[in-house]
Length: 270
Image 1 (cartoon, rainbow, N blue to C red):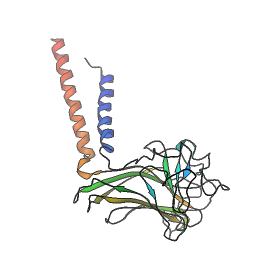
Image 2 (spheres, helix red, strand yellow):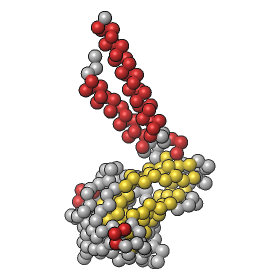
Image 3 (tube, rainbow, N blue to C red):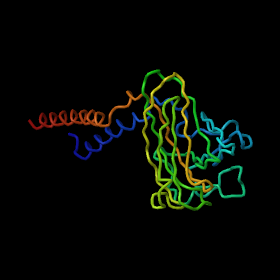
Image 4 (spheres, rainbow, N blue to C red):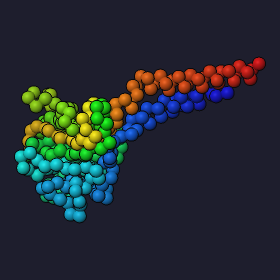
């Protein structure tokens, strides 16, 4: 017979596997976890039209393009090695200043590993984007990602932060933390970290190839407010099972195992 303890562990592993194995299955995003880079594990400012790290081509982040600033300023988006994001300065165009996250940062995202930090200052922000191919016209797609808000270690003050997200010509969708027009009590305290959030959005494909774009927008200018991003995934909405139906399917399988175990026990005792 299967012991109760062993059975409970077996059932939990089935349910856990059912959920984990479907989250990013078939994602159309390349390098959505930001693990593939030219940076050899060292935190770096992403290459842009304004500044190119020595020996780095493109943004330095495989599959992604670092855009330009709408006001003509120098775009400031960084890639961080999660293991030393608060202790080692990123290689950047500002070598005389500390370029690391506030000590309140608690570690890598639930996606694990490394991540991108995007400046929300209107004079320094620029979109991080990727051309998504293989879309089906007329189909809805589910975009998911992890994000959070924080400051660099050498900046102090209350901030707010948003990520403006778009896919092709679909309306831009926004996730945000804090109210720019509200009192300090409605903003992120100085040097604080929000923790990681998971966001889910749905977009309608109008073309087989569309641009996926993330733009950090924060207040006030000069601090700067920083948005963190990781675990980007885009799949057909119809390919993502509803959590309730997925759980019922897993539990149904578990129930079948229970019935068989009981029948075997009854046969053995006869």
